[in-house]
Image (tube, rainbow, N blue to C red; front, side, top):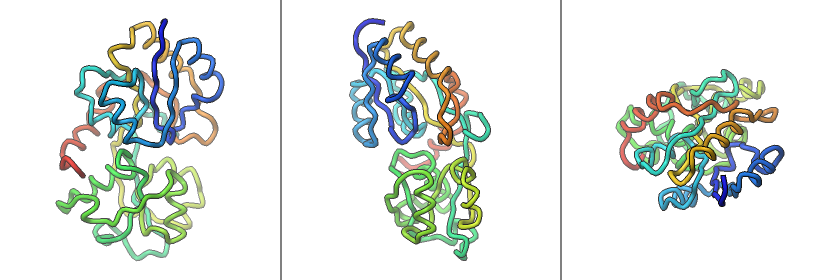
Amino acid sequence: MGGSSTFVLDANLGLTVGEAPWVGFLAAAGIVAEPSTDLAAIDGELARHGADLGFVPAADYHRFADDPAYRGLAIATSSRTGEPVQSSVLVVRADDPATSTADLDGATLGYVNTSCSSSWFAPALLTRRYDRRVAEFFTPVLVPPWQPQIDAVVAGRTRATTVLEDVWAANPGNAATTRIVDRVEGLAPPVVVARDTVDDDLAAAVVDQLLAWTPPPGAIYGPFVAYDASYVAPFFAMLASLPADP
């Protein structure tokens, strides 16, 4: 496992590469971790085959899943169910009159970034019912990820947001301050991928480390499981039904 490899990852996804035991493992394996919240930059590095490893939203991986240079190594799971599948819920304030997506035509929608499975592609799937893109149906507003998405709705900074149900359910107070008016089932959690430059020994060591990792208390995602294309296939089929630029 000699040489040096780069590992780009979405810092919003909660993999604790800056803490033990990851720091020691990465150093021993010759892997340089590059956490970032700039998904456009991460996408660019992967598109150029400039990164050896990546941890990205499943919707992001869908964009280059047909690239033979990259293969899946592991996939995160739901923090509630432990399964490699999640749901996203469309929420509004408890006092909002909306009862469905249809009632929110033209409303502001809090989203994290345009690679986010739960806050961008989930509403894209909801608005597809009306033959509209997200930005044609809603007025998108950038907000910080996870509980701050919900807080932005409660504070009135955005009328709605779609957020992982795991996040919404983790805070019992959310049921009092917000309401779920729609949902998208069958989302795939984020995926760790490896480039063809990563040999089998290093890939196996990374997988072992991922499977042995225990998420910290309050983590958005549960433990990793080994990647299987069947885990992402239903979600990828949903994404394939969307316009090229949702």
